[in-house]
Amino acid sequence: MALLIGWFGEKLLIFTRHSQNRVSNLASLLTEVFSGIRLVQAFAAEDYEINRFSLEAEQNRKAKYLAEQIKALQFVVVGFLEAMSVILLFFLGGWQISQGNLTGGGFISYIAAVALLIDPISLTTSNYSDFKQGQASCDRIFELLAVQPTVIEKTNALILPHVTGKVEYCNVSFTYPKTDFSQSQADNKPVLANLNLLVESGEMVALVGPSGAGKTTLVTLLPRFYDRQSGTIKIDDIDIQDVTLKSLRRQIGIVPQDITLFSGTIAQNIAFGQSYYELNDVENAAKIANADGFIRQFPNGYQTIVGERGVNLSGGQRQRIAIARAVLLDPRILILDEATSALDSESEALVQEALERLMQDRTVFIIAHRLGTVRRASRILVLENGQIMESGTHQELLEKGDRYAKFYAQQFDSQI
Image (cartoon, rainbow, N blue to C red; front, side, top):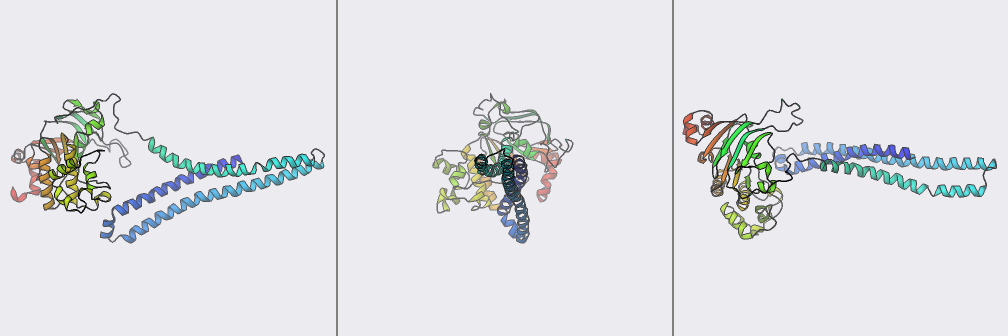
C-alpha cells in the first residue's frame, strides 16, 4: 500500500503541475484580453478571443480532470487492497485456528488491532494526495524565489550623495542576455560597443537614430536596470556600481512613452513611491506639469480615482501626471523617452511646455523620433549600431549634411 500510495503521489504531482500551468495560461489570457479590450472591439475579434478562451479552458479542464482521475483511482485501488487484506487475514486466521496454532480470542484481538489501522491508512492516502498537490504549488513559488536578480547591489555599497548631474560613459559595451529567440552568442550582437560619452551638469543631450541603434539601452544602463558587460558609468565621477540602487534611482527621473498609472487617486500617483507627502507639494508639481487645471475640473480634484492603468484619463493627461511625478521627485538627471510621440498637437503643446519647465537646471537625456524637442538640445548624438556616429548642435549637424540632416529632412523636407 505504501508503494502504491507513493507511486500515485508522484503521478498526481506531475498532473497537478501541468494543471497549474494551464491555470496560469488561462489567467494570462484573460488579463491580456481585458487590458486590450478596445483592440478586440476595434477588430471585431470577439468570436476569435472567445474561441481562444474556450480552447485554453478546455485544456485546463482536461489537465484538472487527469489530476482528479488519478486521485479517484488511488482511493479505489487502496480501498480494494484494504478489503482484500482483511479477507486474507480472515482466511489465514481461520486456517491457523483449524490447525490449532491460534485461539479464537487471540484472532479476534488481532483483527481489532488491524481494524484500527484502516482509518490511518485512509487518512494517509488522502493527506499524501493533498501534500503532493500542495508540493506542485510550492515548487512554482520556490522557482520564483530562486530567481536571482541580474543587477546586484554591492554589500558595502555607498549612498550616492546629492549630485550635480555630470554623467560619463567610459568604453561601455552591453549585450542583452540570451533568450529563446537568440540561442547563440553570435545572434546576440552588442547593442553598445565601447561607447564613450561625457555629459556635463545641466546639459541637454538628445539621442536620435534608427530603431535598434541603442538609444534606449544607453539611458537604461544609467539607473542600472541592466549592468554593462564592460567599461564604467560614472555620475559626478562616482561609479554607479559602487552606490546603492535606491540612492542612485532617487536622483534619476524618467518620463516614458507608455505611462503606467496605478489604481488610486491622482495625488497618490503623482506622489508615487513616497509614503508621506504634502498635498501642497503635489499641487505645485501638478501646476509645473500643466496638470492642475484638468485635475481641478474633476468633482473630487486630486482625490479622483484614476482607475486601473489610468483608464479614466486621456493620453495627454496621463503624460502630464507622469511629468508631475518627476517634478515632485526633483531629480538631478532626467530621462525623456519619446515623451510626446503619442499625443495630439494640443496635448503635445501642453506637455512640451511642462517639459520645458521640468528640464531647467537638470541634466537631460532625450530620446525622440519627432525632432521638435531635439532642435533645442545642447548636443545631439546620432547613434547607429551601438556607436555615436555624429555629435553636435542642430545647426552644426544640418550643415554637415550627413545622417542627422537626412533624418531631419525625412520629417521636415519642406523646411530644408
